[in-house]
Amino acid sequence: MDEGAEAYRRLLNRRQVRWLRRLGEGPLREGARSVEASPVARVVRRAARELHRRERAEQAWARVADPAWRGQTRVDRVEGRTLVVLADSPTLAYELQRRAGELLRQLSGLLSGVDALRFVCGGHGD
Image (cartoon, rainbow, N blue to C red; front, side, top):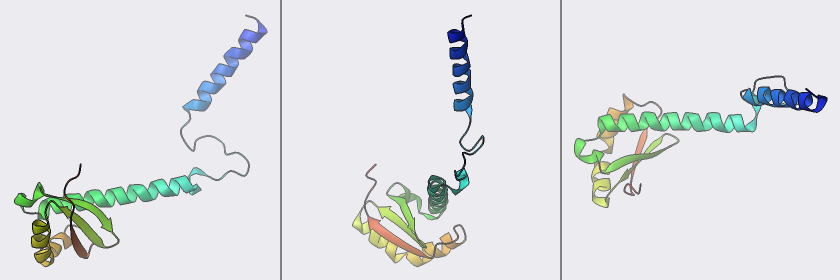
């Protein structure tokens, strides 16, 4: 094998090894931050926490909501300590708001960190 082919093969092998590393593996460049300290890692961790919190809220709402409402409501988001639920109609949103105290008591046993409910007419728009 000539020198050019051998050099090309070594280059390919080095690239394959380099690209098989996972994020954060291998030595850091001088002056580089660790992956855990990067701004992107912080954003990803925050998004994962928010997603987990929303999933817990959806599960809790599914257990508390009347079966007749489940197809007409959905958890939109958790804003601070407030669970925001979308309702298909203003009438349903009003009815849910009337029952907010009772629903909040039931939710408090299933979902920590939420101490208020807000119902918004928004439908499913999926």
